[in-house]
Length: 325
Image: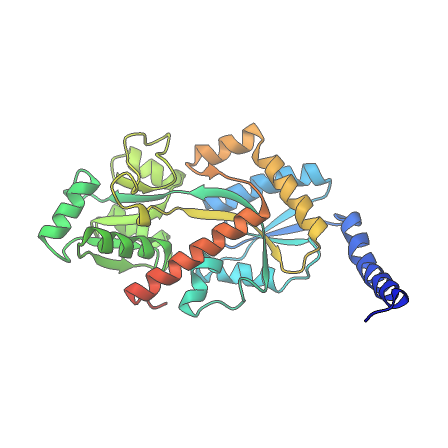
């Protein structure tokens, strides 16, 4: 049994050990903050990260620098975050796929639970299911009817093996009992070029200005959308949930992350400042103008979303026998 003096000594030691962390958190931020965007410059995620960085810089009174580290479906950028000092000066902006999808395919260079701390959810990026010029289907139900009548003849392009689009396709085939040929690409650039030259019937891609321009020009036709609700810009296009495919109705969830063991007061401050920025009218307009849905909320809630998505992905990957590229 511990004596009162022993308990007091242990308590004193614990308090002394916490002093450096508390002091560092109180002094934060004392230098520029870096946001590592896990995708190429110029895309929607990059635009949003830079707009958010500007607001955080003004709110925190310190420069916020955005750096792009693309590759491996976001894993390269997030690995940089995982290996950074846990001091609140290196953050990551990414979809949750490097944490909730890649590890189930044996291609993650870091442990998503042990090495990364979710800070705040930022946005949902809807997944558009688009018909190309050679797709005769006028809507998604007709597409499924065509796939059922001619198994394997409908070709569906995604951003790659075991990408979110591939996961959605597997769910659709399972739920609708149809056979569709998967055409995996290594990223979205070539996929979109080939869609415009009608190399396949359907593609799944995140919403964004370039895609919307091609849709307005009539080169691509929206058949369905993976999103929590219909998009304001596409009010006549149903979600997959409305079409009776709720398990496939997924969108890309993006957020801010920090290295594990970043001081709790710093993480709490970051979460509060990100939520404050997301509430600003110009930030919401920028997000909604690119068909992205602002989210926000607590770090704990964000972590639960990631855990649930990870569990769902693991189940789908096992059932479909999906292997990473």
